[in-house]
Image (cartoon, rainbow over all chains, first blue to last red; front, side, top):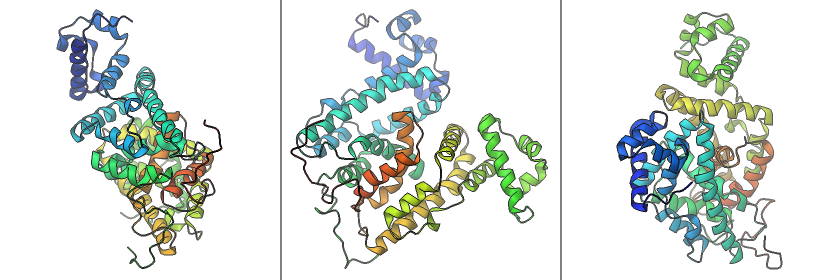
Length: 209
Length: 209
C-alpha cells in the first residue's frame, strides 16, 4: 500500500477523526462514509491507503501510542517500566481504555478487527516488552531463565482488565506505578522500593490487619 | 425470595439447562420462555424464584462453582492456590471461559447483568480470596503489610484475560499451576519451587537466551 501521498499531518488528522467517531458512535456504527465526510476525503482514498475499516481503526489507535516500548531505554527495568507508564497521562489512559472497551466488545463479531488488533497493536507491544525485558536480562537484573519472564504480559494486561472488572475504575498512572513496584518487579526478583530487600522478611511485631 | 420450594436436585437441573441455553444461543437471545420450556416449569415459578434473567443466569454460573475459596484450607498459601486450581478440570475451565466470554460481551449493554455478576460471582470470589490470603498472613507466610496483597485479584484475573488476549487460548490447570508458582507466590515473597530461594540470584555462567 502506498501511504506516501498523505502528509504526516494529514494522516494524524485522519486518525484523530477516526478516534473521535469511534468514541461517538462505536465501532459497529462507524462507516467509511462517515470517515470520508468528517475528513473531507474520498472513500477511494481511504480504501487505497488502509485497505479496510479494521485496519484503519487499529492504525488510528496505534498512531495514538507514538512511543513504543522498544524506544525506551533508561538503564534499569524499573526505570523502563516507569517511563512506559509516564508516556501516557491519566486523561489519555481513560480515553484509551474507553476505546479498547468498545473495541473488545466489537472484536467478538469481527475476526478481521481482532486480527488487525493483534497484528498492529498487541504483537508490537509484546515485541517491545520483550526488548525491554531482554535488556534487563543482558544487564544481569533478571536471570535469563527466570520463570516469571514469560508472564509479564499477563501481569500487565491483568492490571488493566482487573481494575475495570474488580474495581470498576480505569487505570491511571498512580495505580500503574504502584502495581509495577508491588507486583511486576518483585515477581521478577528485581529490587523494588515497595518491598523489603528480602521478600521473605517477617514482621512479627506488627499487628494483624 | 422463597427458594425452599425447589429441591436441590431440581435447582441443579434448572441451572444446568440455563447454562446449556447460554452456550447455545448466548445471553441476549436467552429468554425466560425458553428456560421455562426447556425445564418444563412455569415462567411464574422462574420469576418467583430468581426475580430476573440476570440473577437467574448469574446464579446458574455460581452454582457451577460449588467449592468456594473460603472452604479451602490446606495449611499453606501454595497448597490453597493449587487446591483452587484443582477444583476445576480443563474441560470445565474451557466451558466456563466460553460462558464468561459470552457474558463479558453482553455485560456492556446490560447494567443489571453486570451488577448481578459483581454481587453473585465477583464479590464472593474476592471475599473468599481475601480469606485465603488472611490465613496466610495469620500463619506468618506473608507480612500483613505486603504491598502485593491487594493486587492478587489483578494477578489472577490477568492470567485468565491475557491468556485469551495475548495467547488466544483458554486457561487450563497446567498454565495456572505454573502461573501461581512463577508469579503470584514470588510477588508475595512466598517460597516457590519455581524460583530459587533468593530471587536476586544471578546465573552468570548460563548462556543468554
